[in-house]
Length: 201
Image 1 (cartoon, rainbow, N blue to C red):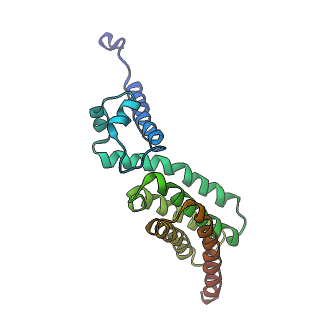
Image 2 (image 1 turned 180 degrees about the horizontal axis):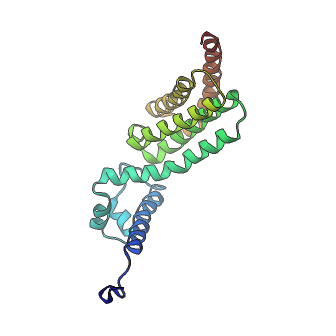
Image 3 (image 1 turned 90 degrees about the vertical axis):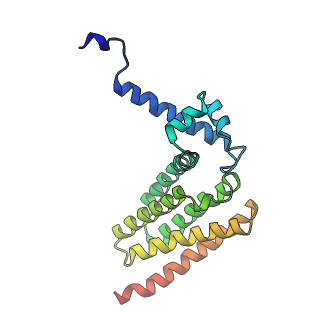
């Protein structure tokens, strides 16, 4: 061991410390978003809450948008795990499709009030949607469902479309339960159309 390195933290320890600090800044932002929205989030307040300087925050993330994208991605990660758990428990396509559609819709609409305008058009939400489609498609292929890709894409994008519509017309939270019923009906229509197409293979 080089005597000159004695007492110095290892590169692994430095890396773990950097990851921990990075996560602390993201966690601070998520807490502040309980009383703010994504567009108006004050990065000086985030830095103060994480006990770092604002320049340190920019040093870690580069730009405001890159930081906000990391925050949204972190927020959505467990939602994807929930979808994976959901399809793992489902036993048939009639159960899987409507439940995944509802999960996608519920995730997106429940965030609209605190995340603000533009949230649904963000890159992390697009990534979330693509991952949800992939999870659903994989399970549909496992069940040997014909046109699995098309059904997965239509299911998730339909739910996204309803979420986007609810944002555009400023649907109150209390009325979003009615939109979830529309998703159930949409899922039934998709499955009905899919079952008619399947014999044509």
